[in-house]
Structure formats: C-alpha cells, structure tokens
Image (cartoon, rainbow, N blue to C red; front, side):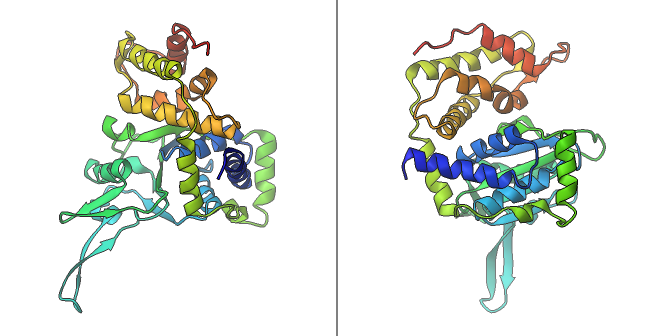
Length: 312
C-alpha cells in the first residue's frame, strides 16, 4: 500500500464516522489520527454528546470487533481482562478471555472503577497483552482503548492516576453541537435509534494494521525531533508546572504528527503538525502547581512561542 492509497483509506474512515458524529469534523479527525498512531483515546466530556457513538462508529468503519465495558465501583480486574475458569471436561482451569480482547474497547466512565481495576488496564494499554497465572496472552491487532469520563461528576469517582493518564495518547472533548448540526441529529434520529448504524466498514482490521505501519514511514527530520524535545524540556521547566511531559509524550507527539502528515498527503512532518497536536496530546499529561491558576492551552501556546521553529 502506497502513501496515496493509505491517505485515501484514512479519509474514507473519517467520512464514514462523520455519518454518525455530526458537526465534529476536527474531533473525528483527531480520533482517526490517534487510531493510525496505535494510540488510546480519552474522551472527557459531559453526558449525551456522542462519546459512545464515536467509539462504535470507529469500530464499524474499520470492520473491527467492538466491546463495551461499563466501569463501576464493584468491577473486578478479572471482569476486564478475563481469568481462569474451571473446565470439568478437562478437569483443569482454562483461561477465559475478558471483554478487553477486542479491536476497539470502550471503557465507559473509566473513573468510576476502583484504582485496582483501573490498574488492570495498564499492561493491556502499554504492552497490548494480558498476563494471567504467569501466562501471557496477546491482544488482537489493532487494539485501541477509547475511555470516557464525565467531567461534571465528583461523587463516586476515582480520578485517573498520572501513570494511566500517560497511557492515553490523546484526550479530546466533543462538546455541544452547533444549532444546525443538532437539527440534523434530530432528523437522523427520526428513523434510527443509534446513528452508528449508518456507518459501513471501509477496511478490515488487517488493513488497519498495515496503515498503522505505513505511518511509521513518514519522515521526521532531526530538526523536527529537536523541536519536539525542546517543547518537552520547556514543559518541565515552566514555573507553573509541577509535573511536565514524559519522554513517552514526545514519542506520542511524533507518531501523531506522522499520522497527521499522512492524512494531509505528505511523506514528511512539518512544525505546524507539532503545534496543531500539542493540546490533545500534552494537555492531560501536565500537572500544574496548586498555587498557579493557568489555562493549560494558553500555557502550551506560551511555551511554543519561546521555542525557535525549525526552518527546514
């Protein structure tokens, strides 16, 4: 598969998802960038704006297996990953895969689960595997966790720890639709209960894996890599920041920039690719000092303005 073919298929995925998610073109585009980058997506938003529909639409567009896990305080790690179940015919325990064994896994209201259950996702998200009784089981490819959390609720939740937040390549918000978009949503719901039913597969999972590998071929010059590192270092040294970006953030930012370049039909990354992805890739990783009241997007803009842009 060459670059033009990959771009065409990626944009076809976007167009299919837009059948279900009306008026949120930039958010859909970011979701596909995250998918192409083999990253996990966190959707932090208010209830009822289409978070679940987006996850289901992505799964349908790539022809993948979709599983939904409703996170609750009493959910156990084995309810997510699976575990040994006694087989009377074999007279032994056999591993029974949990709902995490899917291409697109919706971790709905992830911050309602206990820290122990949240931690069960760490190995899955980073190593793409599950270990049970000393045996490791590989997760299917592609494998993407799309987690949701409702930002307005404060009771009965367990905020995600920094280690888990750092596993999410991007965090986005859908927000309320524009008036015209909301009118179109109502018209579509006259006939359908679930707008993801309008989405058709445009590729299969094997093709998605091939596209993810194609992203890695997009050229990133040493000057661009130095630019990324300078941003990472500046985020750690800013006086308002208590915990800055980890090296993993730089890796994620580079990979997302490669995917963005591919969507635009380029075989190389430019500085604007980096700038355009800073908020969705970095904002949720930074921890500010309690005494500093700063808007994180404005802080990132301030950081970037002080860093020389590569001229190549």
